[in-house]
Amino acid sequence: MKPLLVEMTFDFICPWCLIGKRNLEKALGNLAATRPDVAVELRWKGVQLLPDLPAQGVPFMEFYLQRLGSEAMVRARQEQVREAAYHADVDVDLQRIVTMPNTANAHRLLALATEQGSARQVDALLERLFASYFQKGEDIGSSEVLLRLARQCGFDPRPLEEVLFDDGRPYVGREAVPANQAVPSFTIDERPSLAGAQPPWLMLAQLQRALELRPLAEARRA
Image (cartoon, rainbow, N blue to C red; front, side, top):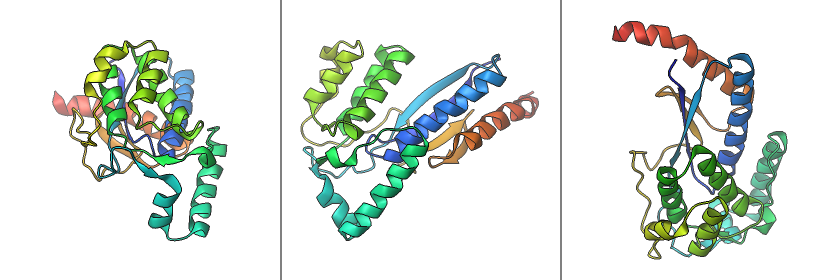
């Protein structure tokens, strides 16, 4: 049986993407417990939600005040994120975030690292990027931060430096992803399946449904 292909579209600055990743991991763990015969191939498809941000980013609180209109609205949105993160066993510390970063370099770094490292290394780098931003409040638009995180995951930082630019040029992925793509979103066996940080039980149901549809798809190709 060929691996079940699961693709997640994300941006590093979206807390729902981190929550969605954690929910996906729980769903995959449940799938492995019931279908140990099914191998899964994960692919991470980055999309830059804010390609027009300056290279150095903008003040985090100022960005959300302009977007949401008031401190009360910002507090309400952040409380919504904290509540969802709590139920997903995700640590976030929004108070530590100073800068809303331009994520183009982070996406380029991860894309090149994907070509050079193992799946385990890539996942470790993705986790460190999320943790650097949402738990430590670091500026993941900084080349210095990005290369340090890559080094911690066993990557040689020298070739990765080639894809880091200081002019704010947008990220263009190797696979076409619409700029207005909802994140997180999930494609299973090349079928759009889920949008948003859905609960693990719903993700598991979609994974199982994809497996059920395989005989039908194979019959159509025959």
